Image (tube, rainbow, N blue to C red; front, side):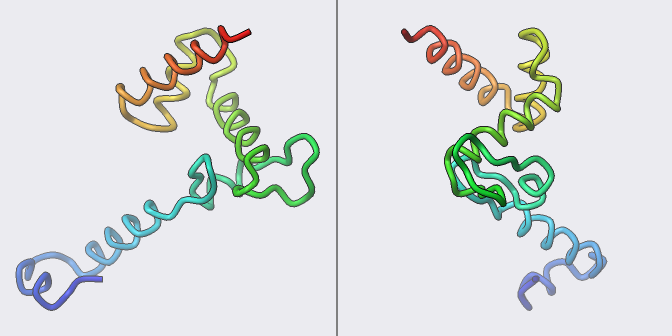
Length: 112
């Protein structure tokens, strides 16, 4: 929602566009649980992890991790290394983020 000052600064902006932009920005800031799922994304990909109870819960760490794995797999992350990078990039459009996730996953995967 635009403040009166913002409305004066942008007199030519379409009110429907500014309201839509504000709504999208607000919706994008809402995330839930340890894996920071947007509610609509968790509704689409949320699954109950081992030992969990229905319905899946984005605040349950096991459900959240298994749901994130499902999201990555359905985005192609179950393929080769390039597919995994693409799936992580699809999740967060930042090359630095992808690099950090892949590097951390490699380190965790090499632990005894």
